[in-house]
Structures are given as C-alpha cells and as structure tokens.
Picture 1 (cartoon, rainbow, N blue to C red):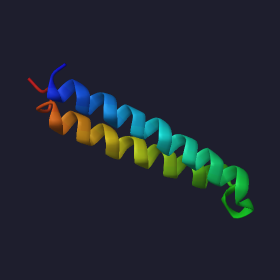
Picture 2: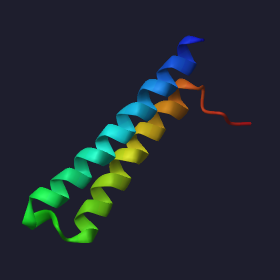
Picture 3: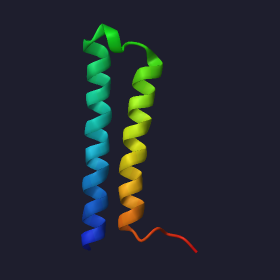
Length: 62
C-alpha cells in the first residue's frame, strides 16, 4: 500500500472515531442534545478531515 492510501485509511478511521465520540457526548451530556450543535460539530470535523485528505492527494483539480 502506498503512503497516501495508508493516510486515507487512517483518516477515515479517525472520522469514525470522531463521529462516535460526538454521538457519545450527545448521549451523555444533556446540554449537547440540541441537534444543531451536534450536527455542526460533526460536519465541521468531517470537513476538516476531508480537507486534509484532499490536500494530501494533491487537490484532485484540473
């Protein structure tokens, strides 16, 4: 496997862990039960990880 493929696999695992952590936090903390807060936190984290993947892959542009 190439280094880039390993990086992508690692980042995808980190995204799954991050989403699970957000779900756990929403389940355990009543103040985070507002769906908007959990949704924004999850989408922001996923966007950050995807930005790292695209940057590592060379942008994938034209």
